[in-house]
Image 1 (cartoon, one colour):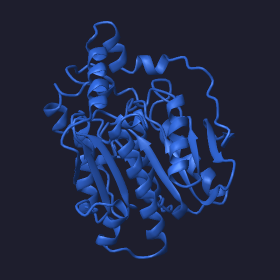
Image 2 (spheres, helix red, strand yellow):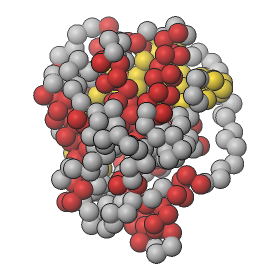
Image 3 (cartoon, one colour):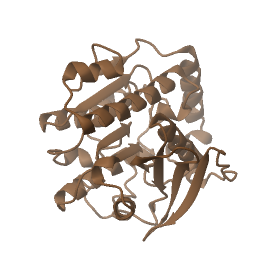
Image 4 (cartoon, helix red, strand yellow):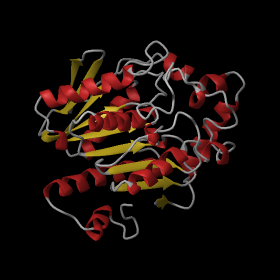
Length: 330
């Protein structure tokens, strides 16, 4: 397990304190923590950068957006990006920006982002059905499984894992790899960090009335169902994973327990814990040193997958691709 940096940067500290102040506000805080602000946010239309093409895709239960480079697209790989939002928030512009970063870091790969159905209007299994529909669309349109990378943050990270579990259970081919940012893997909130980071988490801390305890998505199902809380699934045969989390987020144990279980099942896992960082700090994109470093790590992971597809790599060779001697796969 790799711990990144001993302390957060000055910029990250300012952002973390700002989030904490907003969360502590008596009026704004509950709406932020419950996801109401994100769910009801009205955004301006997203302007696709001139270097990309955006294609609208119609799936069985939802729509999706396919972002592709205008020049020199890499047709040998694609990312299936599953957005976060606690299973109650639809796609937002930040995830379109995420798609652009994945494309650039992947040297011109395309990114498919389904705007999957969300709760409470559409509880489980709606999101999983839509994620599966997006994967099947990719397969039907010529992408082999070993050229598809699943990526997701928060609920999207959990959904990416749930989709992998579903594929395995139904005898379908798994993707090439998984990029998981602060994945929400345990909707039963049973991990130790829900207690140890309770007063530290600037977004979800100091309350039990947040989206972390919202079971709208589970509906009438048992939240321990592995397709809802993939932490309780069997990861045998899973592809390599990159897991990133912040050390002070309440969901930290969702990542550490995932990494441990996957490692015990024989999966290659790289888990990076960014010190003093909060839930999905990667939303700062390239504006915070920590977020920039995390995204750079994603790019390196994609390059590792490239090499692994073509040849067998030893641990030292994999470490060299990350540029550090002390960060092996677990």
